[in-house]
Image 1 (cartoon, protein in one colour):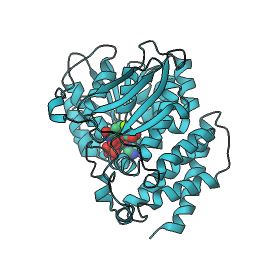
Image 2 (cartoon, rainbow, N blue to C red):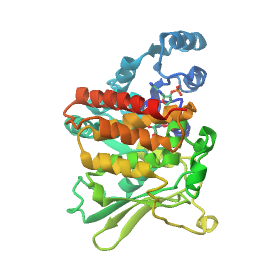
Image 3 (cartoon, rainbow, N blue to C red):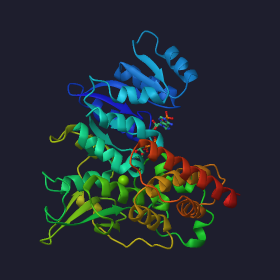
Length: 390
Ligand code: NDP
Ligand code: MG
């Protein structure tokens, strides 16, 4: 299988290459993309010898060329090049692991080219759900979820599931959430949270943006919207369950009372290997689950007072149209400001709520409308930010 890895230098990208390296006879890397971590990308190129490597700027491209003398890898840069390597005719599968809205267009390009799309970049689906799913269907792309919860739901759904929950006897989708680093923190403590505390996730090691999303539980909100599009599940059939051990990755509740789940150690190489090999199974490097060491599986309801972002996401999903794109854009602006120490942790939700209130409802018929909603969401969030920044 010939692969493009978008976001190769990030947490998911590195885990993907770890799995790929275990199966040199099975996978061949055609293109790797990074943005600013040029040294990491250079090292990956030396190891996997891709035909193409993509970075963000012309200056970084020049640096990378200097680091790859004699290797034969063609170095490209900029947003267009990302879409180009995502849709190369010789590529079979694209790992979509760029963080945030920047990943939308290359991920969409992979779908349009009918690839096997391994979707980690949930923001793409949150922003552009209807447009994205229409392209997947039109082009006959195979969309496989990498997000551990959605990968678990996919594994627990009937093997021929075609988006009709009642017909398949599916009652509900239950998404588990670890609760993040502040599951038991008091509201008082949350007022003084630092970026260092917010990115220190108890169970998963991830990029900075998704780590903050996990701390606010916006990550679970984005995942509710992601589940809606992936499984054609209405908002009231998607429930969030806090499960601090992060061993059950999600569950599907059937009409007959059966509940099917996927379990495993919290390591993204499992869903990555699953999607790379589907419908087969390959070694991911992840150890067997030791149930005796786990000993207990606990469940709690999410607290809407400490985690208002979850309700904001449900609100955006129910509002339809541009609301989820506005929510996603405002969240990206707010999280960046928090990581920059310009916005207090508890104000992240206020900025998003203000953006949802400020941007008028609109339909999202095409990519242009999605990008416009993203722009409006960012602008509205910037205005709200001015009120709250320290
Ligand atoms: P990281 O921050 O670790 O990596 C992000 C990747 O995107 C890096 O390769 C980065 O390049 C690249 N990138 C950043 N900005 C741009 C841009 N403007 N243009 C092109 N490339 C860019 O994130 P994660 O790997 O943690 O997450 C990636 C995606 O996967 C996110 O959407 C996240 O929600 C999702 N996900 C992640 C999980 C995890 O366990 N990490 C779990 C489930 C989903 P560089 O570093 O070179 O600047
Ligand atoms: Mg997840």
